Length: 117
Length: 493
Image (tube, rainbow over all chains, first blue to last red; front, side, top):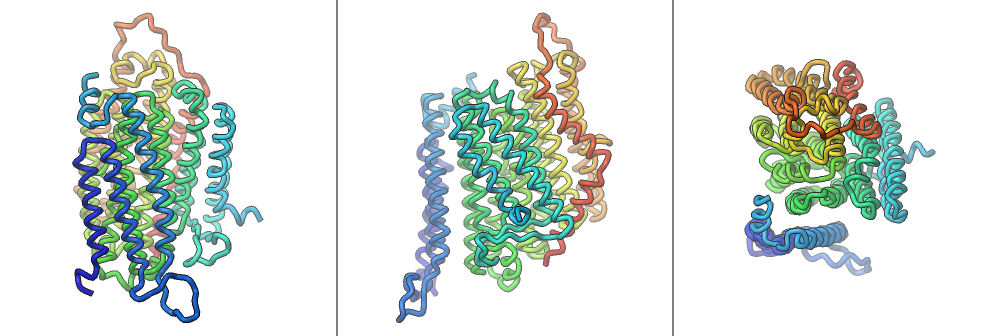
């Protein structure tokens, strides 16, 4: 299999690095959460990709099919998606509380307010 | 009959009790539920430890599905020890919480607080008891998400930013663990930790497995707060409510250390992790830097909770030094310190909780002359501090002694120097507090009457502090179990 044939893994790496970069570089707390979400989404694709068996059909039993894709990673990643949704929700809820307390969602402004105490 | 169900009861009891706390809607009732659930978990953990010490490994198959297919809970000496430590600390700190939480947290939010507490406990116990890699990730996220909520309960608004920062870093760590587990599944088609251990040797040389190890170690190190991935910890501990700091400081990083041990020694095997991959030298360097740098930073902190938080980073360094030796003696030291440090930090943070309850602040300056005004609270801090330094007849001495012994056995003299310098630095930051409390008189506030904290706060504090002295003198229980745990970890494969 050549490098191009593994294109979904390239997408995983691209998404992961994009998400990671947003988390690190952005000063906006909402954008950070979105970046984190992207970062997690890349891992979902990683799991979904590794469940695919070349030439395999969806894992529903039929008589004329002998090769199936592996359904387990897909089931696992459903759980991880739920975890991701919970994380995003909690993160955004925290941002709402931070906005109420500081009246801003910009990281540097929050630092300024804390240091002027 | 019920004895056969012990492993699942360990996790189910706090899990079921969590929504109950939410339903009762009254702080006091929620506390009763949380405390009883935690106490029951402690009894279950004690029974499990007793059975494990007699019979060896207990396996529990969910729904009767045999191991590699179904989810397995697997208890051996190592995690039985972690389970009993986590449940004991949770129960003692919850006893303290009744009065302390009423002071620090709004009445309406108390049921939510105890719900999050029980979920966090569920997650920590689940991480320790499970024998399934993906299950471990789910429990890790349960404990992490609820601990972000617990930290955000802090009264200071900086608790919110601390929780947010922890959420971002914690999620990255957990996602790294998820990637690592995915890569392992890719190569072995199994998620059962024991099964992984048997199948991995065949594919050990592939780059995928090596990458999996790297992702797992980095992810777990984030949760463990190993230097330089500890940045979330000081603020989280400093601004969380007193009881949350005591609970998390004593349990969360310890369970992460257990997970690290489990993956490195049981799943990958010491040979692969420390001889094929260069983890030994990485851990030695990071552990030493953690001990030295975090101790130095701790000296300059004015907020005592933050000072102890940096000291926690340093203590994690000691544990990782023990791991890096990858010998029975080193692991014994690590596991022993895991237990003893939970006692020290739990006791110290509870003592600070008493201070916060009476004075409303834990800044160094406010403690002037406190040693005479609140002698029992500061006495607890004194003994806990001595244990942190590693003075003989305290638990801290025992764990430092074992680390030093393991280092000498390996002939790593530099580690010996690191431990000695680390202890001297600990002496400085503990001394700053004691000097303020015992040698300075508060001249500016002569009228201010500060009374001793109520007995409901002092009893649990002194229970943990007393345990420091007890386990510093009678080491037969802890050392015996730590040695057995270490040999279990080293023997497997």
